[in-house]
Image (cartoon, rainbow, N blue to C red; front, side):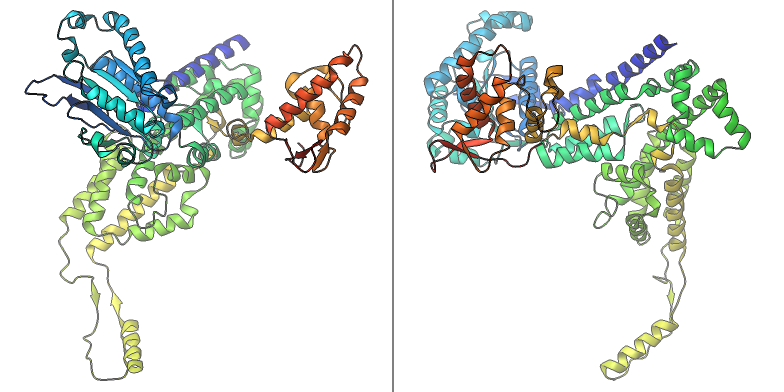
Amino acid sequence: MGNCSNEHRGTSFSASAASLSNPLICSSINTFFFLDKYIFSQKSCDGKNIGTYSTASLLALSIIDLCETFYCHLGVNVPDHAMTFRSLCNLLQDSVTPFVVSVHAKECAGVYFCISTLTIRIIGLLQKSTQVFPQRTESLTNSDFPQSLPVVVIFKDFEAFNSQVLQDFILICSRYTQELPFIFIFGIATSPSAIQHRLPHSVSSLLCIEVFHSLSCTQHLASVFDKLILNSQFPFKLSSRVIQVLVGIFLYHDFSVQNFVKGLQFSMLEHFKSQPLSMLCCQKQEALLSAKTLSKKNVERIRHLPSFMRYVETQEPQEQVRLLTNDEHVKEVCQKLLKNLHKYHKNYYPILQCLHSLTSSLPKFPLGKHIRELHVSCIEKNLWETEEYDSALQLLRILAKDELVAALRKCAEILKSTKILQNVLQQLEDFIGRLEALEEDSSGNGIISGKMEYQKTDLFQLQKTLLEKESRRTKRMNPFEVLRSQVIEFIDSLVREYLTPAELQPLNEVCYYSSSGVLRQRLNVTPRTSIQAALSHPFYYLQNESLKTDAGTISSAAPDLCIVYKLHLECGRLINLYDWLEAFLTVMSAAEDQDTNSEDARFIQAVSEMEFLGFIKSTKQKTDHVARLTWGGC
């Protein structure tokens, strides 16, 4: 049974990994621009039409009269730029030309280096082009080859290039456009106006620039949530705290969707490694099959799950005894609970999207501007018990008729895309029909009040009169207000029924990864703390028994850098190098079979490594001293 469980567990992990690496998902995540057909068209040069090429991209592209140029404004999310340009390079090779070359500023210190690098790479691509584009073999040997296949040059970091190098390179290429057509792609991270600062008018006048922008990283993050996290077909789930850790790293550290996906992948790996019952984290039919073949050890693990223990406490005494003693009965109940868990996810996400569509346009966004914020609130606690939810309902109760009908239509469209919750869809369509059938109330707001007679009086008397009139006013709800109140109550009932916290669902530990502390420790590390831990406790990393020491002692078997680091912790702001050396020699003298002739050199090397790591620096106060830069050991 153990081997069988491992097999099922491996199958469920493979299924989840396959979902995470689905080609359609990876296509939208890893390219960072959803491809749209875009036509590269060259301008006519001296009455000759050079050609027309097609490709796909939402990236920033611009067109030059003499040398076609693509102007890419990518933003500041630097970690994703390499993958963006790599995807763009593959895209151009598939749809435009096999001669696509990318260069960095460090490779182009001068015009000579820039042209030589470009030439070498084009020659290498020319040798491979017959295999990559066999249908263009005739074009490669034809005399009009330059007019049929352009050369694409990608400048990845445009701001880092030397201005004079760019100017000379563009001027040289502009003289050979009819013999060898060029397409330039400039990657801009700051502002489109950077080209005006980098290139003078004599060069920029050759360019006819049209700027395009890539999608923002937050939009890509929203697409990742829609395809992976807010998807009932993807069995692996994240708890609210784990989502907050991943989103926090994204928003406050790197803005990298690629790193966010890596964090999601690490969470999945950690879940399947640390949770033995993760073999049930798979598609419904596979999970039910795995539940039928649970081993006795796994049945005991299910009994110890907090969510299952809460479920047992809600049952009758006889049922509790069966759940705690009968393994076969536990397997049957486990199958039923897994069905309920999958049904919960199928109902949860459509209602979540409906609630988001209703509240995302409200003033001040009481439930959050993005659906991920609403999702975190729902799986963390009872949403209907929060002040933000009450505020959202109050704002929904004052919506106009056309706004309410438009919002309900959006909800109906969301529910139509799913084959479940058809009864909810029918009720929504009934409310929409009744709202559209209502005639405008001729009485306006439906307030009946006595006719007010105004007369000349002072401000105090007027205020007193108005307060008395207000107290005697009687308000009667018109048909629209009655129906609007029913709609809001219906929405509130859906929230209370379908958007319950995930931790209240039995067996939620099977699918939900909740170790936010482990994730933060692995992904949001502090380099200084890690280095100090390694130098203070080398056994933790090297796993060498000779490195085990008592607190306050220094092992002579430890690496030289660890010994020097521990000795420097005992010093003040300035460290005497001679005293430091003597202490190092004292520690090393306790070791046997040590080469005493090399101890001075080893000490110098260790001190140099300490300076490289940033723990010490040289000082002008005393030539034979170094200054300590860090305080507080690990």
